[in-house]
Length: 282
Image (cartoon, rainbow, N blue to C red):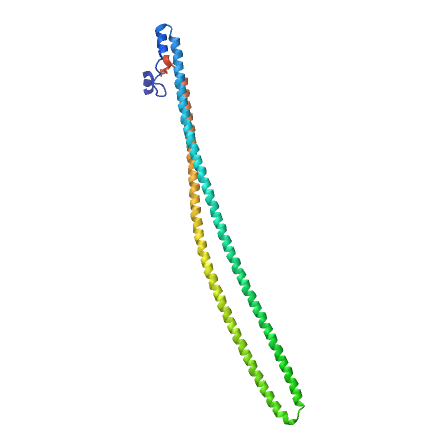
């Protein structure tokens, strides 16, 4: 009922006041009694101008919405590029950490190989020393046997002296052997203590370095987790932006469809003199 009252009051379907009659139309109506046809032509021209203005306004609004959508799309792509850049930085940091850890592993491996080589060389030197001592001992025994054979050929008066000398030599050999054995055991004990102390030092140094590496790795993992969380937030924001873009496009399509229906309804409605829409009887 309100729409019919507005139409009867002279307001169009779009809520705009009816166009005023042109001076040419007024003069035509005063000049000739059959000016109805001229008035109709003038009314159609006025309606066409109004329709063109509305179309231009709709086009301008549409252009504004398109520009806004392009700006939003540009912002979304800019955020995508920033996210990709941060992901590349995270991967580079992770690779640098792995390379650093591998370098340290190679360093400790080479150091351990050097220690093992030194131990093998020390064992070889010990074997050579033992062989030299055995050879010396064998020479002494051979010399002793030769002296004994020579002594047996001497007179009986020298037998006691020979036996006494042999006893003294045996005692000296035993004491020398005990002395050499004691020195060997002492040297071996000191070498074992030094090696144990060196291994303990290497172990403590390795554990300290391993603890430092664990701390650095924990910090790197925390930084990586933080950046991954930030990456997920950026991805979620981008998805929300894309959802807003889709909603904007859908709203635009609905607005355009509704506007087209209104224009079609306005064009299809019957009009009376002066381009006014005539209200239906219903």
